[in-house]
Image: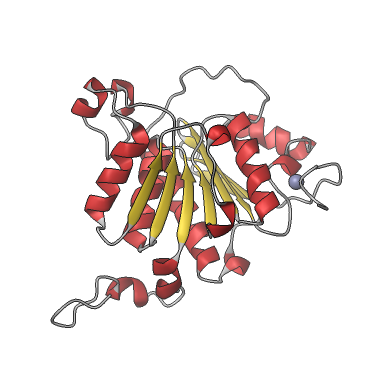
Length: 255
Ligand SMILES: [Zn+2]
């Protein structure tokens, strides 16, 4: 939007060429999880000009979150403030034209109008909520970009309207070998989640890649998206992309 005097907040974004800034300004994204990844992902979305963000997280701020979450403060931790509320307020200070709507609840218990979302971003720390998000995104045909980290390692999966989904990857032996090798983000079906090592450099890296993929989708650049999973290991200076097939036994296809 042009300001008095002819300045445009989005001038440098428009100069990129590949980003459809007007579509980004009109877009509405769902972010689930307002922890380390969610902080960075919402920051990247609002600074990129996304018009509206719905943010869902049931948790409150704790002192141990403060090594990696730019919107959280000591006061938020003392007050046990809701993560979604704190991120929403901070993000709207960064970019007042953007509306961030917080829901302090579990994603499984949140009633949402899925059809209105352009992209869904998973910023979660457990496989159960990821699979919920995956199946709802598939059902409502909204692209889903999932990220996860484990210390210095990260994983990103792009689930487009067509093609393999998060659940498709679960039964694949070559995928499971890579999951173990990169030891990342809930590949095993375990519902006990002990505290994991976490550092801001990894979460910031993965959230930046996650939002970049979302901006490609909003800008009609899906052909340039990661197919389908990217693994990243900062300490080995290694990353790789693994293409997947649709698993014919996956319940999320053929509906
Ligand atoms: Zn599937």
